[in-house]
Image (cartoon, rainbow, N blue to C red; front, side, top):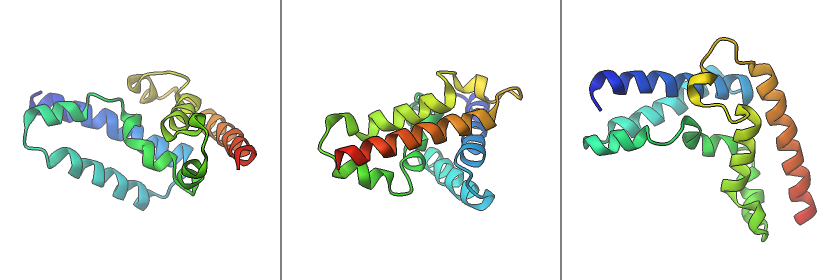
Length: 136
């Protein structure tokens, strides 16, 4: 991956992260900036070309696990004994609610409805919270 490709991929990923964190999770700009800066540092600390490629191998949402399972959700998941309450399964449910299975390139388009994405995320998060309550 050359520098041009790396820059292009970074722009797509960081735009997806920024839109999700601001419009869906309703984070403040400084919090978003700090999170994205951590991800940039993660990418830049690798001097091995294959590691930079690997950074972009996963979809942008792979780097939002911590953000999606924030606000005590991860702790609640870890207390559950049900295999269905695994962090990966729950994270994927939340991602699917936001994206409706769209790819990153579609999420950076101006016509993507972030308000609806937030509403879908909030509804799915409520369902997950209610379900976890039944498992406690």
